[in-house]
Amino acid sequence: MEKNLKGTWPIIVFEKAKDTLTTVQLWMQVVGKIRLRKMPWLNHSWHVTLYVSPKGFTTSSIPYEQGIFEIEFDFINHQLLLVTSTGKSASFSLVPMSVAKFYQQLFEKLEQVGVAVNIHHAPNEIDPAVPFEKDNTDRNYDAEQILLFWQAVVKVHIVFTRFKASFTGKASPVHFFWGAFDLAYTRFSGREAPEHPGEMPNMPKAVMQEAYSHEVSSCGFWPGSEAFPQAVFYAYCYPTPDAYKRQPVSPTETFYSEELGEYFLPYEAVRNSPNPESTLLSFLQTTYEAAANTANWDRSTLECDLTHFEK
Image 1 (tube, one colour):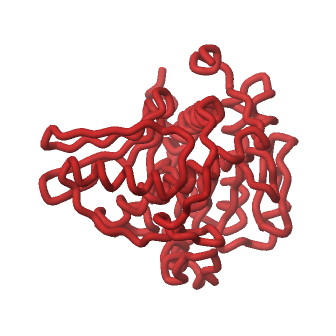
Image 2 (image 1 turned 180 degrees about the vertical axis):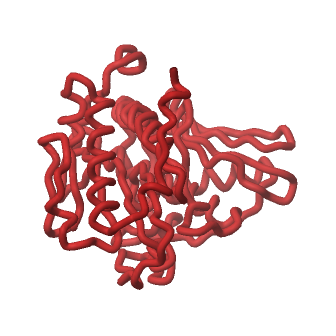
Image 3 (image 1 turned 180 degrees about the horizontal axis):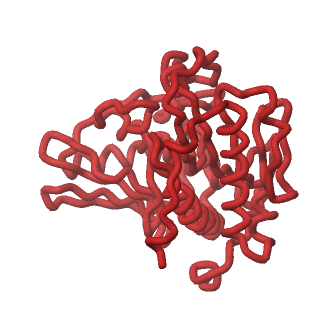
């Protein structure tokens, strides 16, 4: 494990990690809904996301009646941490447990530190959506597998952050959506988009339509699913010009899914390349150019070159 913490991109084997990823996604839904309820609404649902931290994933600061508080998944020491600006703190261990048990422990700790919150009790973007307090299924938690996944996300976060620096237009933070369970970053052209169809399991249509109210070029990192059992990078745009799928993109392992209307690059192709960071940057840049060029974005006003400041 020490080698992965220091250098190389970690190996992610979906079959080994899938049960733990499912568990953590459901736990994160509980934490994410707390952030959703306590934060002011931001455009495109940016108020609901989590962020990569030096230990795992964090809500960052959330306002409440006595100041601010933060909830953090610590995947190094395998704890859930709560801290408030009043000096109160609490924690509990991340071990195999049901969603109901996690939900119960978290709300007990919130009460202990003086945070009062009510949330919608069922997950989003998951079907079936079993209410948290009723989900008593025994859940796996493999500490090594979630550490490997988080280490990969840290590597990706650094590259996404570097890619973000070359864009001066409206753009999202590099953030983690607990609904789809992906690290994402989105650029905007500044123009409104056609109304989005808004289709997503257990997600209000109005929320989806507001999220895609303006033209976007998005990229992200996703650990996979039973139907697509490998970690991948993705890129898409909305709306999607007909010529988008025919643009020159790199690296060579990149492929376009007609069914999903997105470009994909397997995580393994990046991990095994001589320079993973450059390989991923190439995917991010060329798929963005595919979107911006085919949709006629005003790239001269949206992009910048700050490399001379790095010298």
